[in-house]
Image (cartoon, rainbow, N blue to C red; front, side, top):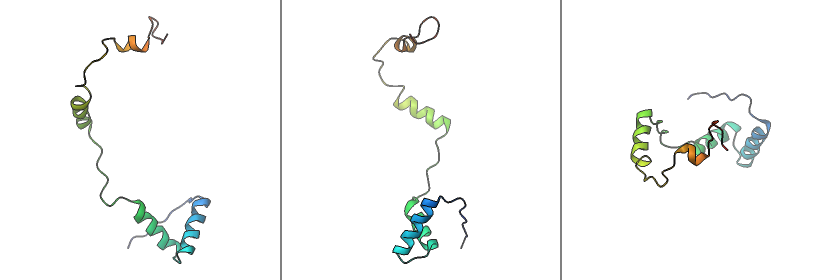
Length: 86
């Protein structure tokens, strides 16, 4: 078994955990383990997509959308010659 030490637990959270543990007739340690088990996903968290994977997704999903407005981004945003939105 591993040991986990939590520091700087907010007072409100500590009191909530203690109240729930008393209500369930468990130790705070048992209640904390059950709360962690309930809050953590069963399966591993999926890895973050790489830049290449994200770019490929954008190319497939977003960049293939039809262009409905032929104006440039500057025209749509209303940039003036000074580079500010006007």
